[in-house]
Length: 308
Image (cartoon, rainbow, N blue to C red; front, top):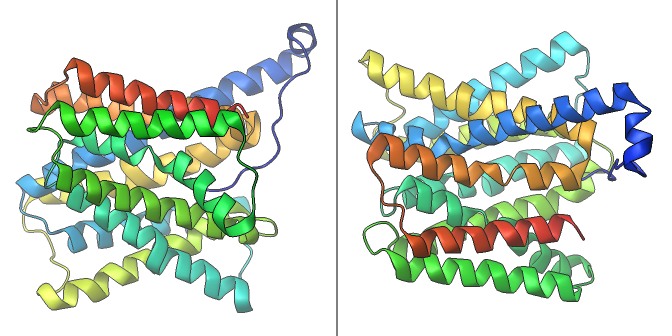
């Protein structure tokens, strides 16, 4: 997710021990980010189930974004944190959802038609490295030696995933998911300016419905958004809107406020691991040495980038 406030790291282990309230906040923050990672890690799993019950990508993503938006808006209203956006900020927020987040999600679900959920999750996680590249190219952020090493690890990991298991990771599928990662990276870089003055959760409250409207428009060319006729289909749609979207979004930002951006990014690396494990358990997706090594390279790159 987007938004990178300053780190809130303790100065020493002793100082942490002397502040039991801070220790509890850290543990709660880590737990919340882990909940978020597990939730987001189920997205590919729900995507596979959606295919099995005959739901189209536009239908799934329409329900996903509009359902999750309702939950986020309700939470903001209850907490009294809602702040209406206006003018240029509103236009940017809607554009981020309608084009950036919608593109990422559409390509992600399309990738599931060519690769296993685990491999899609691993390849998508190249986006932190792509954020660094785009930030350097567009806003002049400096690239350090550590960043170069992280980029090399990420690209090497993708190479291992591509060449390792033709049944689990087709080259075409990898290209599609890399497109999703690039769209997500562009979304994050573009949103930085808005996040200087807007609460990340408020921004998300506008991004989600804008993305949902995009898929309503896309679905008009394929017969419109379908109202499910079976309980299985409804279960998938409710799950993707709540378990895989609304709950992890809320948990992510709650954890982010407690442990800071760098540690949030590191803990979030559990996300593709969750997808790989669930894919293996639920769908018997192959987990062989080379893809695992590639995934470890990509996760190492994320940890290195967040430790800069």
